[in-house]
Length: 187
Image 1: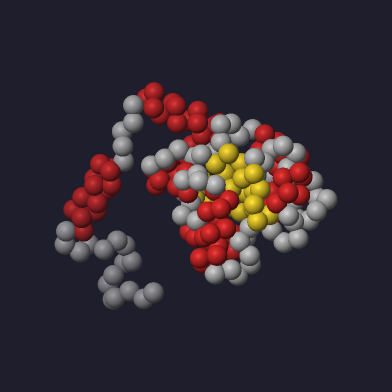
Image 2: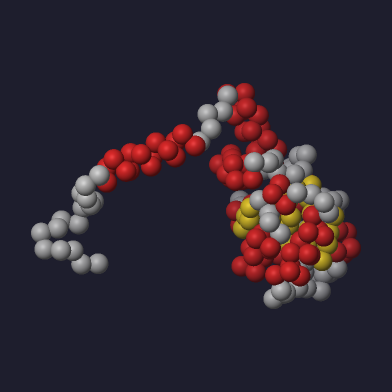
């Protein structure tokens, strides 16, 4: 980007800019709630129960206004790709650590929901067919809604592994999408 002659490339000094920046920052700060300490402690504990860092939990909570009631995992995120592929130990440990929250899985490819449920070792509450690859928006939405089984979408976090899976979040009106590598960190 080229600058005008005599311009040193610093911030703009347009009239009123600093005042607008101050007003914007103040308005944004006023929007953020000032939570009582006990509410904050409760939310930090809840984030730990879910296995989420507080920042992620708080952003989901702020965006939806609701607590997380379930996680929706793709079979790709769980690394269960084909019949006979057991749930890897790191994935199993992470699922076992989730407290007071549903664990639903979406079976993709040649994997049936029943097989995925069996391979989950009792750590998955329910399994359903995933939306077909390149399915229409409506078909994807219907598949996600069936998998939710009456749970409110804005209380469910989708943990996926591909770009196509991230689109399921919008189709199902879900609270958030977390990439598998963020939810299941290599350790």
